[in-house]
Image 1 (cartoon, rainbow, N blue to C red):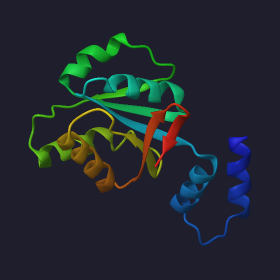
Image 2: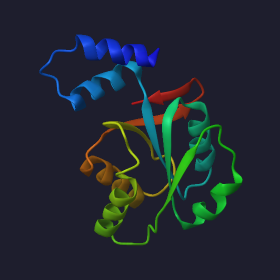
Image 3: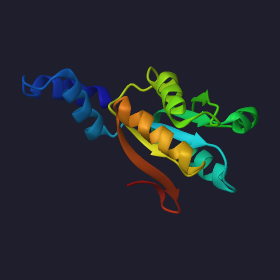
Length: 152
């Protein structure tokens, strides 16, 4: 079905739309999203992150982890492939933003990502948001609630 939507849109879309514009519209229509999730400090936050990964319909999952989470995440089971990116969050803000951009820029394929920052500190949140916006990609925040995955 997704392939049919893409083929139909390419045939019918106005010629003035560039390939990135077409891709953005297609991804918006069929809601294919890549999830970027932070797994770091915060009591009780890992369950939120793992639940969001397993219950959401994600084309790709990029899990950004700190040193502690990096050594622990291998023991958890996910129902989809997860690309783990390990970072040292003890660096300065500019260096941290640069590291995040360098490590995830070739992993993101779309023009927009879903982002969860349920886990982690304010410094980590600011660095990830800044890195994503400087790539540049659009950001939709997501969370797991009783009703399922919501975006806001």
